[in-house]
Amino acid sequence: MAMSWVGFGSVYLLTGLFLGGLRSCNGGISSSYFRSNDISDDMPLSSDVFAVPPGYNAPQQVTPNEPGSSKVIYWAELKKHAVGTFVTYKYYNYSSPYLHHCTIKNLEYNTKYFYKVGTREATRQFWFTTPPEVGPDVPYTFGLIGDLGQTFDSNRTLTHYESNPAKGQTVLFVGDLSYADKYPLHDNNRWDSWGRFVERNVAYQPWIWSAGNHEIDFLPQYGEGEPFKPCTHRYFVPFEASGSTSPLWYSIKRASAYIIVISSYSTYGVSTPQYKWLMKELPKVNRSKTPWLIVVMHCPLYSTYAHHYMEGETMRVMYEQYFVKYKVDVIFSGHVHAYERTERVSNIAYNIENCFCAPRNDEFTPVYITIGDGGNQEGLLYEMVDPQPKYSAFREPSHGHATFEIKNRTTAYYAWHRNLDGYSVEADSLWFHNLYWKSSSAVASF
Image (tube, rainbow, N blue to C red):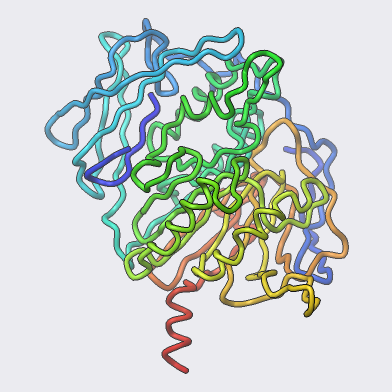
C-alpha cells in the first residue's frame, strides 16, 4: 500500500577501492580512486530483501495482490480507520497487483502513529511519525538518495542510509527508482520486487519522489505509449494540493522547508503547464515561514562528468534565472551515476555582447548537488571534464547517500556519505547559510 502523509488537514566492496588521495585541479577537489569492478550485479530474486511476506494475500510494498481490504487502521492512542481506494494497470503482458492508496486526514503534528493493513492472518503493522508544524526555526533532517535500482550496491546504500546517526526523517528521492525498463520488455515484475525491497524504509517514513528517465517506460512498439504509467500508478503524490495539474511537478511544505519537485522529462518551455505552474509557485513561497527553498529534479543543470554532459542545459537556460531571483538554497538532482557538489554559481549574466560565457561564483545563488550514486546496475561514471571547472567544488564516482539537516532559519548542515565508509563518516560536507536571511541581513547592514 503506497501511503503518503502531507500536512494535516490532508495527508496525501567494491573491491580494490583506495580512497586516500584527493587531487586539486583548477576547480575544487576530485577524489583519487582505483576500482577493479564498476558494475554492480542485481540481487537474485530469491534474496530475502525481495521476499513476499507470509500469509494469504498479505500486503506487500506495502500492497496486496488481490482486491482485499482498502481499510487502514491507525492510532496514536485510540484506534481509528480510513478507507482508501485501489488502482490497477496493465503493461504489455503484465497485470499489476491491486495498488491501494489511502489518505489519512486530521493527524496531529510530530506524533508517532501505528497503522495496520491487510485482513485476518495476513495483517501487517507499521508506524510513521508525522512532521512537526511548519515554522521558520523548526529543525528537520532530509535524506537524499538517487538512481537506486535493486543491486547489491543498492542494498548497501539503503542500509547505509538507515544506519546513519543523522537519522533522516524524510527522503528526497531524485529519480530513477526500480530500473524495470532495463529488463526485457520493461518487465514490471521488477517494479514489484523493488517495492518489496524499499518497503523496509518507505513504510516508515515519507519519500518525496522525482521522476527520472527510467520512469518514462515508453514502449510504443508494444502498445505502451503512456509515459510514466507504472510510476504514477504506484506512487501517488499530493500534487493537486499545490495547484499542479500533474504528479510529475508539485510542492510540499515540511517543517522549515519548502520543497519544489519538477520534471526533467516533461515539457517545460514557456506556456507549458509545468512552466506556468512554476512561475506561480516560486513567488508564493513565504520565506518568513519556510525559509529553506529546495528544488528536486532528476537531470542536473550543472555537471562536470562526461556522460550526460550538459543534458540539462535547456532547462538551465529556462529556469536558472528564476532559481537565482527567488534565492533557491540548493538544487538536488541525480541521473549522473556519481557524486558532485558545485560552488554557489550561476550563468545568467551571459549575453551576446559581454561574453560572460562561463559560470561565475555568486554567494547569492544555489548550490547544485548531483547524487545519482544509489547503486543501479548501469555502474558508476568515471570520465570527468578535465581540468576540473572552477564551479565544481567536489566530485567522486562512488555509491552513497546524503543528509540535509536544517538547524534553524539561517543554518543547515549537509553531508555526503560514501557506502564504503563507516556510518558516521562524512566524505563531503558543507554548512549552508540560508540565502533569504543572508540577503536580508546584507540589505539591512548596507
